[in-house]
View 1 (tube, rainbow, N blue to C red):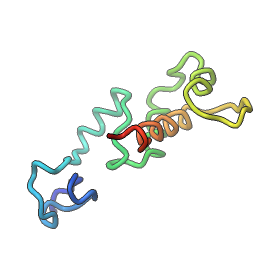
View 2: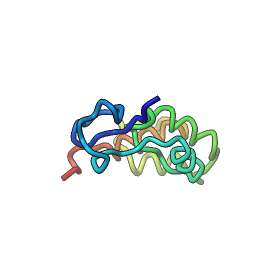
View 3: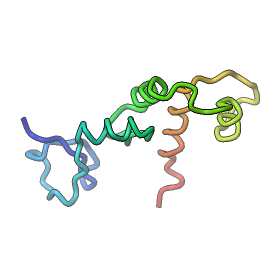
Length: 106
């Protein structure tokens, strides 16, 4: 089976056999690296794993990770002005959205 990579020229996940660009344009998808990131408590890039899945995994691996999750959530993310209890999984999903904010990209 061919290796799958993200090509920063094509801007898609592709097989190395199908992508016309060289390996210097490829971000490689390695399961062991994703596992290492998750076990270290780091959100994997969304191009390799859906943010909902990585959020669910991190919430399970690190339950009660934050002393006051609600205060952290309210300080970091926009809200409707209402205090609504948030889960750790929701926190990670919102954090991933911040990482993907296009206005900050150069």
